[in-house]
Amino acid sequence: MSRIHGMENVVGAESIIAASIVDADALRKIPENADGIKAKAMELTDSWAGVMFALTPEELTTIAVAVGFSQNVAEKIHGKISALNYATTQGAQGRWSIATYHSLDVTLMALRGVESFDDALASFNDSNVRKVLDANQETFQRIKQSLPAHAARMNFKPETAAAVLAAFGAEVSPDLLYELATKYDTTSVIDLEGRRGVTVEFIRSVTLTLASTL
Image (cartoon, rainbow, N blue to C red; front, side, top):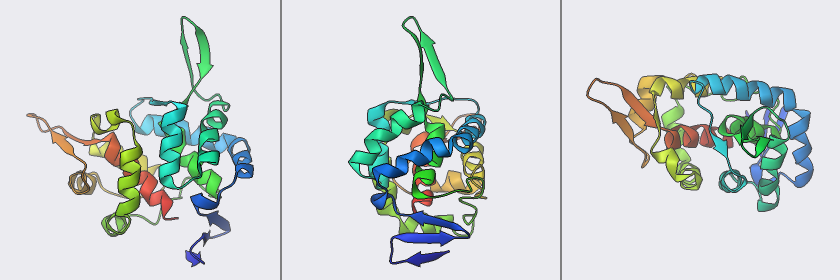
């Protein structure tokens, strides 16, 4: 990986730009990458044990701005994701498409020019993830603060966190993730029968922070 003027990375044949310089024209990359985004969203739904988290337009915009996208671009992402029709909700007032957390990471990667999603985070593992997170705490904390309040109260097994990272090629062990969960003003949990948990807030902040370094 090489950095060019601090604004662009070249990874293999990919040219990945910083979120801050993504313009509205790049939003076309969402429908252009529809198959890959939808496939990764389905894989991540399984990684999260089938749990689906719907995001409001305001929530998604806030997170995207925290990652570094402009307000103008960020506020249009939700509509583009919803238009992919990969998940729908229904009720007394009918059916409508939604955007979930499971498409968030991959969509933000696509907007920046990432083309290979399965191995996008393959450079991260037990030997370097702590160092990378330590070095990018400003980004981590900004992302953490942008997440909905419920993210700090919902806990999943550290094995789930490892599976989410593995969906993008990272090899980080559940034990290390459980250890790190208390390090960055985030929390872990353990119950009287030994079940361990790390928060959605922690998992989301890790994946988005690592992706921001590409």
